[in-house]
Amino acid sequence: MTDSSYQYAFLDSGSGGLPYLAQLRSHAHRASCVYLADTLHFPYGEKTRAEVIEFASESVEHLLRRFSPSVVVVACNTMSVAALETLRSRFPIPFVGTVPAVKLAAARSKNRKIGLLATDRTVVDPYTDELIRKFAGDCDFVRIGDSKLIARIETELITASREERLAAVLPSIERFKREGVDTIILACTHFLHVDDEIREAAGPGIEIIDSREGVVQQALRLVPPRAEDHGEVACYITGGVSSAIEDRYRTFSRLFNIEWGGVL
Image (cartoon, rainbow, N blue to C red; front, top):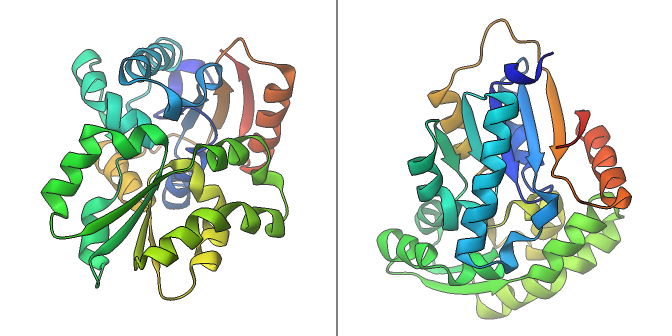
């Protein structure tokens, strides 16, 4: 298909948005989607707010110029928290963000103790503080920024064994358990790649919350799938990266049944 005919664009700093793309495809099998990982600037979670806004804007410009999508799903919590408002003001296209699911967690928590697992940037961002103040003011939050886990998910854990993945998530989850939380928000999209292991480590007494379904439903409400599409999906990364990163995304594309598009 031509570059300009993808309807849904998904943007992340790395591979974290792929489960969101998969979720949309589970509801709309024929939807045409393009995925862009800004691997040149990964990880966003260690950048300043100004840097996140700059890099996210550059990536959106790439998407609009090359693919002309109808909607952009910002499938990155850090990018959404830091840059979504700016992106909406700069570009004449709808955006759907993936902000931490604080409102849903507050509705589900019984003991009012909630864990927030995120990037270092999201944990301290004023937008996160505002979400908590607005929707969960009566809850105690335990915030953990686990950049090392996010980096390992990006570089090795997606294709690792169950045992390796479980061992990687245990330190953060065990801390949440010691603090007595009954709900954990996965506030970085990368964590969805190890969602099963996080649930196993947490056990049946802790509910795990993410924003996949809500984000996808919002995208489909804003832009219903075109009847003429046939499920074309492609994955791209930003330039200036090593051949090892390119090979890794070829593997991710195969795992998620996506055409490998190459480097922008």
